[in-house]
Length: 395
Image (tube, rainbow, N blue to C red; front, side, top):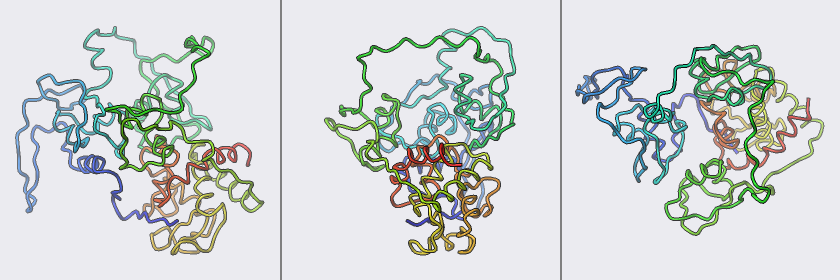
């Protein structure tokens, strides 16, 4: 495997056209407060075109004055940006309302929400005003934004917005986070009532037979999984087509998971990956991703050879800006380069895990692949369970 990502390339387009359209639009969206929009000619002079009559919401985002439908069903050829333009909403809002990221793939037949989830309920029955109560959380070792959001019954996006956290959502022990202005803290002495137990005979389904109109997104949503898991479980690619009558596995078979006993040298490398990750404040899942990646790339060994000019624990390439051969085979430095973030030894020359916007919301395989850009991305997910066991046992 080789690493081909370069920091100097702004975007590597390997996603379907729907994603490319979304990313391209994100680079050309005019400020929401503007009263005019325009494009530029070859000379750079703007072509100004007046917008139709619009109302401004509480954040100053412009919306058409006329009422619009609350959902939209995706058609072939649609992109998130084209849907946003057609319905007079900001692309970033459309992504947020549907829990999508800039790299998310959309599918024909998938329904997208065209307004915030709470908007319909608020217009039907206004909720009584609640007194504002500042609620904060002090981050402890092992915390993640997702875990904190779940504890306080809020959302990841709400916490990120309240605290101006970037897409990588890196938090550190001792940091204070605002989690709500109005939502009361769940009392530890009086836990919320447990949901009613499901009948003993109810078994979690392991497969789904595709019906007419089914999409991978819809199937994933129905069973509480992700498109990435369905693709991996069924050996499908991003462009694969599903058809009525096809049976899809809903989980990656346990047999696909790999395991290995490490020798002393390998254990020392794994322990160093864990130690440096915790020193940098990387969430446990990020450390597990680093362990799995090192196992796939080098079998947890500091190699002085590899595909083309790939070297070291993570098979980083001098020709792609990851450092000199001497730097890449410095185990401590190569681990820090893989994690990246504010303390990346390569600065902005390369992109590590913490530099990937929204990596915590990606699948295990997707997060590793975003750094490595491998020809065989499914291999990272095969080491997920073993990586978590190493994380629990190695110090």
